[in-house]
Amino acid sequence: MTRIRTRALPLLTAALLALVALLQTGGATAAQAEPAGSPGVRAGSFTNPVVTQNGADPTVIRYAGYYYHLGTTWASHWEMRRSPTLGGLKTAAPTTVYRETVASRCCNFWAPELHRLNGPNGLRWYLTYSAGVSANIDHQHVHVLESAGSNPLGPYTYKGQVDPYGDNRWMIDSSYLSMPDGRLFMLYSFWEGGSQNLYAVRMSNPWTPTGAGVRIATPSYAWEKSGSAVNEGPTILQHGGRTFLTFSASHCDTPDYKLGLMELTGSDPLAAGAWKKYASPVFQRNDAAGVYGPGHNFFFPSPDGKEVWMAYHANAKATDGCGGSRTTRAQKVNWNADGTPDFGVPVSTSTALAEPSGTPAALRR
Image (cartoon, rainbow, N blue to C red; front, top):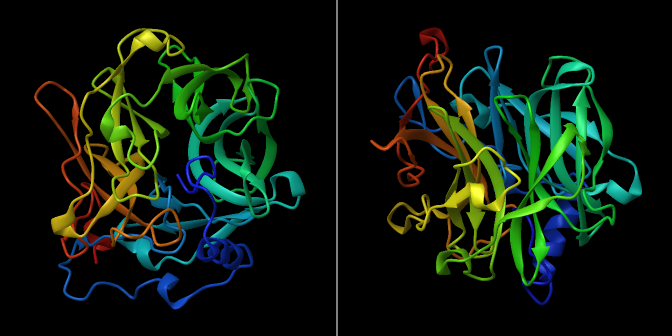
């Protein structure tokens, strides 16, 4: 998640407001400059982070021989980076794929996700995200863009705001769940009853809900309540015939922002009892490696489809919070004997990681 929520904290700091203003006007600082690379990294490997500028709330997909990256911009546009290798995203130039001019949804772009779905016009890329009005984080809503064709770089057209209750309520961190029988659901987060909870709603197309959403999870463990009680950033991982959902827990302004895990054990994603929440966090701070607040992740396959990888954001200091200091990192997902995912621990920025399996030898640095 990208925000400091005013219900969770009394007010935004002047420094954060300055950061938002800088990013909305397209400014850049020395700390945001893309690194030139990591000297000494062996061929066919990379080090984290893979993206520094606009690295929060990342989505990484792989399509037609390229990796594509999206991250929170805090501004009124979306930028996408493209590279034939995962490590190459670090120096890839951003391309602006969409810019908004409508005042009611112009600004504070957060938490993009990119999904290839069957819509009314056939297979298209759908970019779902949170946006609101300038310098006001209490007016965030979920919006959806549709690509003109199969190119993830677009062009994109605005399709609509997702408003399951018809009352324009605050709503963030949207994602999709596609069931094997073709049913489509949207997952999202908003405040209710003093905590930030996870919800699901059935969709008739990628931007139109069929009715009201239902709550499927609320913070119930102590590790979900550091700073404030938060469940957000849901994303789906389907593997071995099972459907898992990872989510981010605790407040993003703390180093204890982390990932939890749920599993769909029934057939109806709108039934809260069909979701099992695991009692312990599955991915969290690694002080020894200098990684704090790891969360808001997204899954993508290796080039040969044999591996599952996870993109996530994290900070380099325990005192960093919800702002532009968060960078995009990536590492491979492993599997436990019982079929559940094993995310391991977030690795340091000096740890060399092999490029995902199936990366052509000619592309390895």
